[in-house]
Amino acid sequence: MSVKSRRSLLLASGALLAVAAVAVPVVVGTASADPASANQPRIVGGDKASLSDHPYAVYLTDSGGNQFCGAVIVSSTAVATAAHCAKAVAKQDVRVVAGREDKRTDVGQVLGVSKVWIGKGYSDPTQGDDIAVLTVRGQLDYRPAQLPKSGDTAAYREGTQATVLGWGRIADGGDRSDYLRSAQVPVVSDNTCRSDYSVYDQKTMVCAGYEKGGIDACQGDSGGPLVVGDTLIGIVSFGDGCGKPGKPGVYTRVSTYTADIEAQAKPRVFG
Ligand code: ARG
Image (cartoon, rainbow, N blue to C red; front, side, top):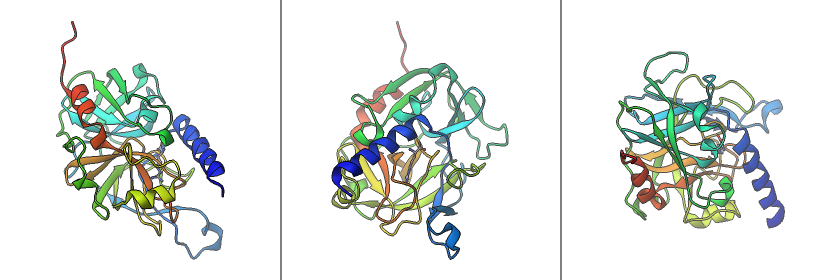
């Protein structure tokens, strides 16, 4: 495929995802002995995860309570998510759900949003800057994730095992996960990711996943955290399918935005 047609494919899928951000985190497996499903990514991997290990993992719903993206607590008053998530639903209709592993329960907190900051220069996930910070109404009762140092490179070394978390769909067009799920994915080098994705920008993005595919985030996981320990290194942004060979997940590179996130996360008094 030409670079140009690959690019338009990515742009088209990015635009589609930005509009239809409606799913859950997924660990997908491609391998299947069943010929009928051989070409379809199947969510077979990943595990149920616990908020006691990752209390900063939260999700976003619309006013009808439908989960459409993930997010991550960065202070007692703010969560970070993807810009394409923040733009998918009007501010007054977005709810942040914290402390709830199982969507079918009503434990934890549901908070509205008073302010939305979108990464400067954001237009489409494939163009980078796919980051937003939502200021909540009230206080989040759960521990925030740590931010990497501004411009940090150590946490992004190739092969670093990271954890992606979310409530995305269990299969393409299939059921959503009721529970928080997680998967382990290694950080991919800039050179490899550049050859996997012509739109890759090492300043604003980072890739994680296996060149063989099989384990990945998927639709509905967008906006959710990629962490190393408790440090937030990435935000789920986009990918070509889910778990496809040679197509790792693309995440927003959080260390590029540390200062912006901190400025937004600080509780502020408006005059
Ligand atoms: N853009 C998707 C969403 O809105 C996330 C896609 C992540 N894809 C991947 N293969 N890692 O939920």
